[in-house]
Image 1 (tube, helix red, strand yellow):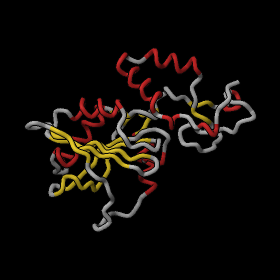
Image 2: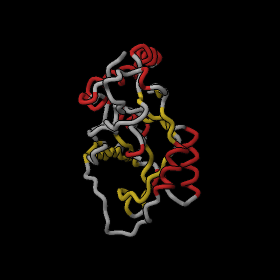
Image 3: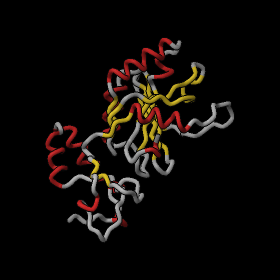
Image 4: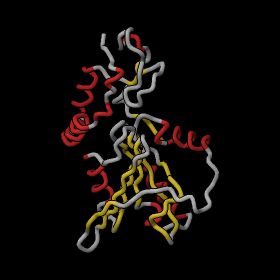
Length: 225
């Protein structure tokens, strides 16, 4: 999921009852994403929870580990990540926020909300010592297309030559890959979208723009005409 898009993608880790920190499956729900955020669809989350209960799993097996990707090379949580983790999982007795970045860097935080509470960073690794199903890329693509919607704040420009100088190659600003189209906002579009945000969301967004250098590829600068 991380490599299918230049945006974040999120979901839930599913575990076995005897080992609640050993993720054996990754479950997507319907969501709207940008390069700095993931917003789950409430109805889809409710349906996912209902299906898991019907399958005989307890909440600690499917609703305690929040997994998501970062399109850049930093797995460190953003202000939006921290706020979401606190808001959504703050009432759980325990929970984990795990992030996988584009360069395979990882971050995981185990948080306790019982007793005195607390949190601790924990290591992340792939355990090849157990049996697992064969890779099914076609199924993963189907799941991605069925569940992930890119927020219109990053609109697709259909004719890149109208937005960039002929002297510069078309470039995806978030992955650095050349392509026939480019995801851009004009300055007027960006200001309009920021104006629509509520104050807290606007603060998070501006903070991200300030600290996430991977938003802009300096080696492939885009010249506006």
